[in-house]
Length: 256
Ligand SMILES: Cc1cc2nc3c(=O)[nH]c(=O)nc-3n(C[C@H](O)[C@H](O)[C@H](O)COP(=O)(O)O)c2cc1C
Image (cartoon, rainbow, N blue to C red; front, side, top):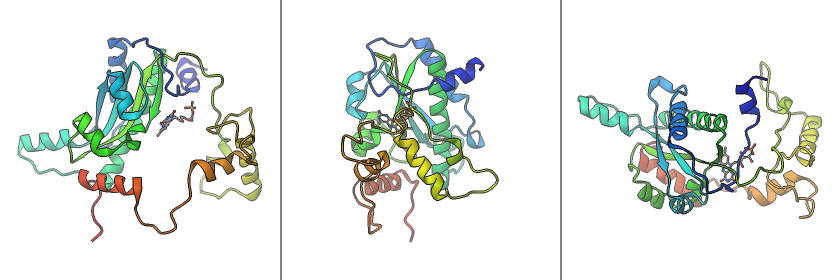
């Protein structure tokens, strides 16, 4: 395997247990430059990256801390402001741009993670910001009310200790469809359930599901972790908060 593939195949998340060791400014800059190299729709680079170094602020915002954190926001503000500056009309705030902007943003995020790993720097991707109150997040980060949405955070640093194992993935046959989509057969479903149950593979979030009285890992996942599906499709709680936030940002329009 060449070095690039070795880096990719050695990726693993550090779930917040970063040491006090700081990453250098030159490494940080390299990670940011690598992130910006990523492909992006219509050459718009429709994101902004907020670099945090205050560990207490990180904890307050998303519950984790490390040497630095990069908050990746879908953001059309820069393009809007430039249009205004040049005297053009431009408005990219709709669901299509939100999705395309999300793709730009997420690709840049993963590139940052890979670049960090290539430099020996560990990372955690977290959506902890979105578990927080959006009003508070917008206030603390000074985010523009419109055209901007905080999508994902990468915490960077050095692991206090190496995790005991690298987490596994489900087999390619359950994920990759050649030529056309096919639902898994009953036999494949049984084997995929067994893969999650296989303690050697470490695919799931927890290992002690049997001790908690579950026959399969996925029984724990569906009943304890995911919660029950809403019977009525009425936006409540976090779903409502997301929809309201996306409306304020201009990305989500009322249907009538
Ligand atoms: C969108 C997203 C959100 C995540 N949020 C968290 C988080 O809040 N806390 C955490 O410990 N890990 C978080 N993770 C990391 C995943 O738990 C981790 O990637 C997954 O368990 C696979 O482990 P690995 O990355 O070590 O292979 C997140 C990952 C993604 C892509």
